[in-house]
Each structure stands twice: as C-alpha cells, then as structure tokens.
Amino acid sequence: MKIFPAIDLKQNKCVRLSKGEDSSSVVFNENPIDQAKFFEDQGCTRLHLVDLDSAFGRNNINNKTIQKIRESISIPIQIGGGIRSETIARNYFDLGADFLIIGSYAVSNSQEVKNLAKNFEQKIYVALDILKNKIMIKGWVEESDFTPEKIFEIYDKSNIRGYVLTDIEKDGMLTGLNQKMISTNVSLTNKKLIVGGGLKNNLDLERLRNIKSDNLEGVIVGKSFYVGNIDLKVAQKILDQNA
Image 1 (cartoon, rainbow, N blue to C red):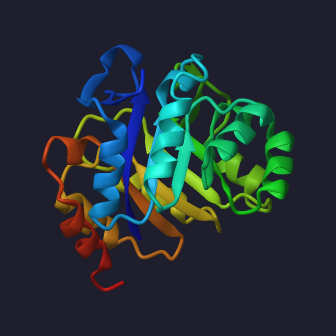
Image 2 (image 1 turned 90 degrees about the horizontal axis):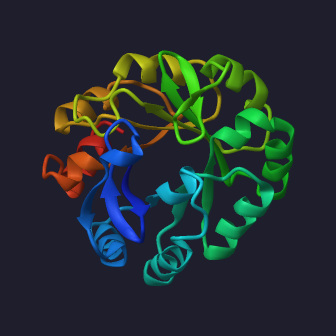
C-alpha cells in the first residue's frame, strides 16, 4: 500500500475543502507545481490530483497548471473531478494523466465508462464518494440511488483498475479514516481500492495496515499532511511494515 499525496486545484491554487463543500476552500499553496515537486522529492510514487473547478462545473480553468505539473514531475498522476464525458476524459489523458477517477459519469453512463476502460485498460478508477452508504454525485451535492455494492456489480468484471473510496462526512475533517467502511468494501470487490477521507495521523495508518488485503493499493493524504500531522516518509514506512 502506497501513500498518494493530494493536490486539490481551485483557480490554479492548491486548496483543501471540508466535507467537499466548495465554499469551504482554504489555500495551502499558491504554487501547486512546487507542491507536486516536493511530493516527488519526498519519495511518493503517485500524485492524487483533483480538479475542483471542474467538479463544480467550471471546466478548463486548471488545464495549464495540470500540464505544468505533468511536465515538472516524473511520477504517475491520477486525476479526478468533473469527468462527465469521454471528451473530458480524453482531455485529461492528453494533459498527461496516467489514471482517471470517474464519479458521476460512472453512475449515469456505466456502459460508456466501461467502453472507455476498454480503450484505456487499467487506467480508470470509479469513485465511491459515500454519504450514509449512498454514492454522491455532481460534486458530492446530489444523492444517487446507488450503493457501493451496486457499483461493484456493474464494474467488477470490467477493464477498470479499481475504485477510490471516500467517506464524505470525514473528508477534510481530520477525524480519522472510516476503518469499518474500508474493511467492509475491500472484502466486496476483487479490484484495487484506494481509500481516503478523514486521515488524521499515523495511528490511522497503523490501523489501516492491519486490514489484510492485497487489494488495498493506496491511501490519499490531504489535509493531514498540510496541517503537519503526517510526515510522508514516516507514513510510507508505517505502511511498509509487515508488508
């Protein structure tokens, strides 16, 4: 399991939200390119990048910054946020994304997303943005009729790489990962699972390491790093213990 540090882009700046609410953004770095370089220098093996403007329907604002980040680092980049058509998906791949995380579009147009995964095999993750066991869509402001189990039924036999699981109630709140939710969902799928939402400190990582599953691919580290709770090198060492 690997540490995937997060950069959430809004108006070309590195910000963090609380519970995914657009109005809650706080700027942590005016220069996301420098932030990305720092993460690579710390030994991180993949960058988690979220285009918040796109998630809330403001497309193409951060494209140049994403391209500059791609040109500045060599590690893989996974991008999520507002990918609601094949055209937008291909645009992010053109900008240099190695992996895409698709939420609303995967719920509303599953066959199109499965077809996209055939063209970009093992490059697509489906977002499991969960609030009270329901998948939230459209920037986490609209509840769908889907549960994680229903999403697994649709996508487990497809060419997607896996899922990104987020507990919305905990996201950006520093209250600890929802270990029960993670443990439950990783046992229901044969695909890779990346987890996030609420990581507080190293104790969270030690508990996460105790969930024994080869499917747990990574944990997203956001606000816990930016406020100083997590040292990235120490965090990776914790996850590497007894691996």
